[in-house]
Image 1 (cartoon, rainbow, N blue to C red):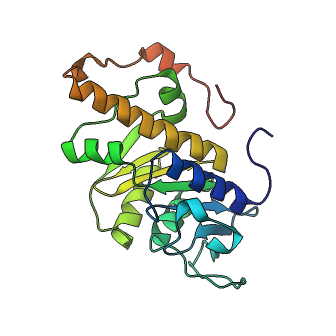
Image 2 (cartoon, rainbow, N blue to C red):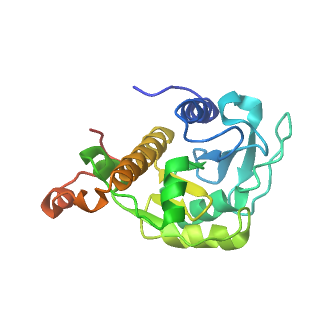
Length: 220
């Protein structure tokens, strides 16, 4: 194993520390979750937790079917975005981890109405396609349903307009890689926009994209 081993909460804590250090989120913005083996429950960050200060007690264990918080010590209240995580898990049984962040470059491009370009082969491999979910107030069922609907066809990278992103994967490690690549693609897109060269960011060749392996089965 090349990624951090151990409890899923340790893996999510590693993600939290890394994305804050990389500037993908500020303070307690964003939330993380991972589906437990068996598929009926997930760990999700507690309400108000700072992503670079997570420990085992920073997570609530929640039943996916009904959103019931299960008894653990200490008892904590799940993130206000719990509905978003649960709706996606219900729509996508293959998803084992969700990283929800508020990356600044991605959000700026969304506010400007500029789609993120997949500039590099890594962007294409990890992201494939990026879909924007129209604005809905954070924490509500309308946003949760819209995100689940957008992900139902296998899309793993969602921009939640004026809010953040939700990145999905079959492992915590792959969700982490997708989140990092999504913001890198956004930063490169913004740089091209800033120098007036956005139209010169041509897509990667279609025949290359058609032959890409499944990111869930291997890495580059």
